[in-house]
Length: 222
Image (tube, rainbow, N blue to C red; front, side, top):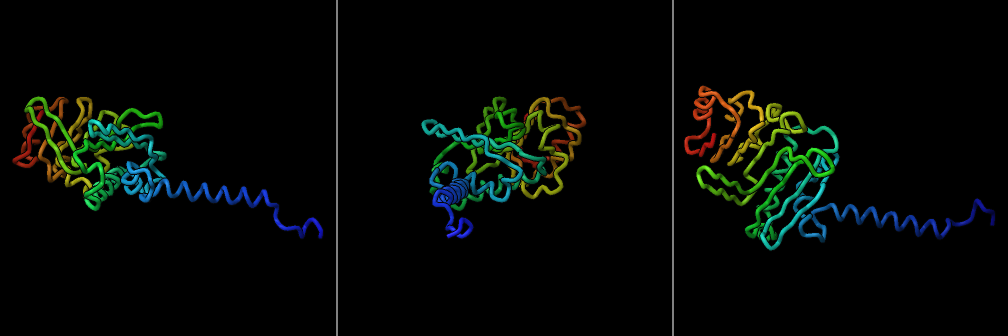
């Protein structure tokens, strides 16, 4: 038998089999069917978004019932994409009431500026704490949105959102002191707010406009 007609090398077959197995294992590991329980929900949330977003880390404190997911953008992403990931996260919580973090966990979904884990640009969570009013808000899904000063010039820009459909059910909105408020009317897009906090500077006119825009029963800390 000539060399050109010989069957494929056995070693090549083994290597090919291993390569295929690794690819399938990786796909399984990144799917909602994964055996890693804390990854099921984030894999579900990130479906169709893995080109632009990467899971940086998962931090879980089972004793204190707290879990935090950190993502960063691989490429430039539209601000609506952040909202879509949050909505899919909430969707999984609703579809799987027996999922372990539904059992009283403090949940955070953070989007950070780079692969090293910081700085935090925006954060979705299911809790807020207000010292001024001694108020603790707790929700059964990610209904709190916190914007840091980095949201002014990094991946997420509040003023570039074209469709607020993914944000209209946000119940608590917190802005860091250095967050730049350019136009008060932007907050009229948050129709379900129960709590609003901003420690930055606003004129008396802006404060009055804000109070007129936000829902009547919204707790305002400015």
